[in-house]
Length: 119
Image (cartoon, rainbow, N blue to C red; front, side, top):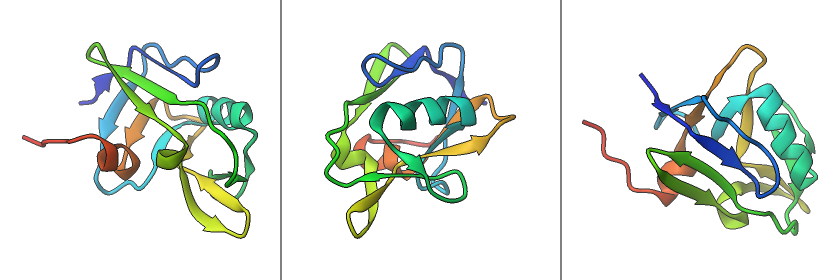
């Protein structure tokens, strides 16, 4: 089972109250429901790339993306979220799981920043 997310935001934006998140070392990015990922991408000026990915200027000054779980905030800044540079564009470290997904998969983007212990 996953752990409930009590919210996520990009300062003024998204909210995932009631969503469930799981940690997965086999997933590279933060992956979530298409609608929520689209909203986050729009807030940072990212455009659709391929396969549920979004690209943004590597020079973009991103607001922090914050997931809240178990009463603790997990924040991600531009250094955490801008990946795979191609020219002046970077892939945003958040991808869509599709339209029928209702939770988040917190992959290596999460685990590079926060200590994770599996039991």
